[in-house]
Image (cartoon, rainbow, N blue to C red; front, top):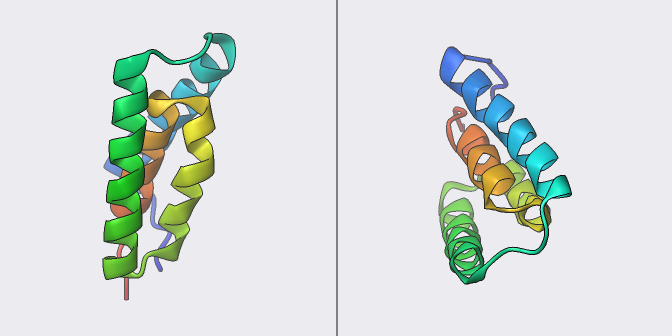
Length: 83
């Protein structure tokens, strides 16, 4: 798996870090955020097993920080080349 940092991948990781910082400061998520997190979790599980991009499973623990951290982090892992 390549770890090349293209401008788009840098954008994803910066957004994930911003989402993590905001996620630490905000109270519990509302119902729409919970639905979005469940949807992202299922998508991550299904697509990761098909693509065999095992690093993308790190998105699952990031969901505790909220969708603002988990989604950009998943897109960061999703945008890398797989062999």
